[in-house]
Image 1: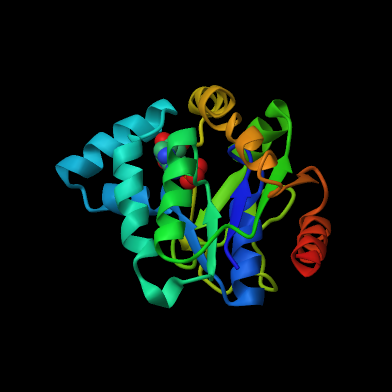
Image 2: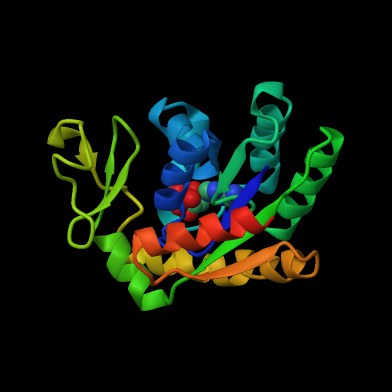
Length: 214
Ligand code: AMP
């Protein structure tokens, strides 16, 4: 099974991906995480990527397609993938289909988390990410505590692109470049729409039901 988690920035894709990885022993592929890893290396490429991310724009399809090609050619990952924040353009979606076909795989379902713009902005402004384990928290609605998080609090961080100006640009980029992909997946009968305003565990329940029905 290969799953695409779809939705605007802050829809809760990363949170659900984290839970599905644990529950189903799948592998999360977040192109945002892969790009941030390159930024951390402080290479010339990393600096270019950071300036694009901080403007709320998308990095080139070519760069993303190259990253994904390496992952799909790894047989250990076959049919265990959860894509988070990818694909983000029609070109990436078509390239993903092509690469999966080349590797005798396919997308099993596309789960779209629907959340409105102002809720997304509020959520992202209070988002915290653990630099050690990758777990995503929200200062107000889902704070880190001893029950849900083992790492030291010093690892909790906010992303440089999680400021209001960049978030508004990210949402515009999503509406213009990414949202049209929904029709592409709808026409292939792969799309499942979920109310992303529900509680985290209610969304997980819906996802479980969809996966069960496949
Ligand atoms: P995310 O962690 O998914 O919110 O992504 C953070 C930023 O990384 C985005 O705002 C884009 O600048 C860049 N990015 C992540 N995934 C992609 C992608 N598939 N295509 C282009 N840019 C991406």
